[in-house]
Length: 465
Ligand code: 4AD
Ligand code: MG
Image 1 (cartoon, protein in one colour):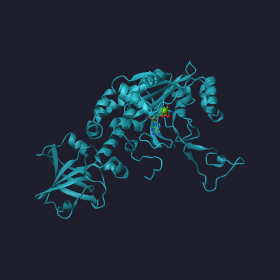
Image 2: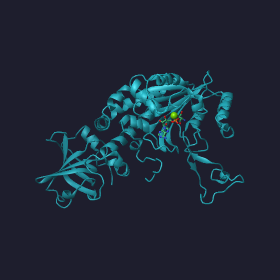
Image 3: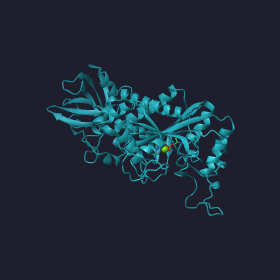
Image 4: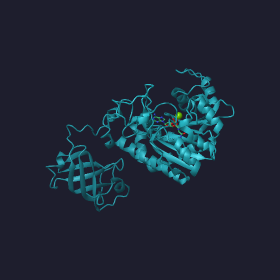
């Protein structure tokens, strides 16, 4: 079967070649019968709209097949495109030949034409892509990914493929999934009664990466500006609407860059990709603006304005004087909880924020120590409705300060000699950040649950398909 003869509905709708014969292939959304003919609404996933097909009773398989078509059946239609007399569509396809590729038993097919809840659709990860909303989400996801690559390529960054299997815990949070080839029923045990990973595949304990940052740093200090965009894995047992065990992260790393430059890049990148989306996917965005979040387009427009920047200490002061009662009491040195972030983004400033200079005690070892000796050059980008979408920092480039911080954070030096080498040989100020790609898709669609912005969500207790 070749695709060359068929056309995608998106192209047909955007410039209908009226009067020509063409072929479409797709899935039936609905069938409506009139006297002597039927209307078939067919989608092929290329855009939100379907194409209306008029199937006349003169077609050889009209009685036997076409009148038995139900939602979900797969078919191809060859016919002549004509101006549609009805409102709501410019063109319709007058069928000359209809071939059924796959039937979908109406008694068993779980998707219906009517709207179904996102919770219900989550039980059908293999079929939900055929719905308007999840189909639109995937198209938006794809476009955002494309725009991210475009942005970095246009700005002179090289894409770096960082490893998925690694021996380092970048964030030091211990949320690692171990990768092993050992027989779990017969683990080799050391004299100290520990699992003997020296006898495992890699000769040491290895895990799935939580971030490609440390490896990206090595190449930033060779090529200048690099970025990695890949899957990352965290075994954090938080069953929230913003956390996945497997998510995609975009991580640029720049030599000769400080925290201010890092914040500028984060802001510029977000603005670029959202602007690109608004111009390239108006129909899909309009769907979400109508059915999911009526403020969506307004909120996306806000991203075009400069983000509010404030230090962690300023943020704490604003929370302390807010007159609000929070479940987690506020004090300097605490990690901001989502209720605090929400207050700042959703209630107080009502726009994206960048909070910088966090206490060193709540941040990983690699962030650059500020002169106050209390804070590090870290920054988080927070957006209304979601909270943290980006986390980044200037990196500690001074060998002595870095080793002291590692000692304080209980990070052993021996496995990180390669990382320390970067400070021993030709060290440079450098900075980078990580954008949670699914959180970006949440921002772009207004979808409130992270399980609905990735095709196959992995969460505690769930990885079946
Ligand atoms: O703030 P995080 O943990 O930062 C890092 O991993 C740095 N090494 C990045 C860097 O500087 N290169 O994670 C970055 C972003 C968060 O802001 C959030 O958007 C997303 O990754 N994220 C998650 N997204 C979904 N599910 C999870 N469990 C996530 N954990 C972090
Ligand atoms: Mg973070």
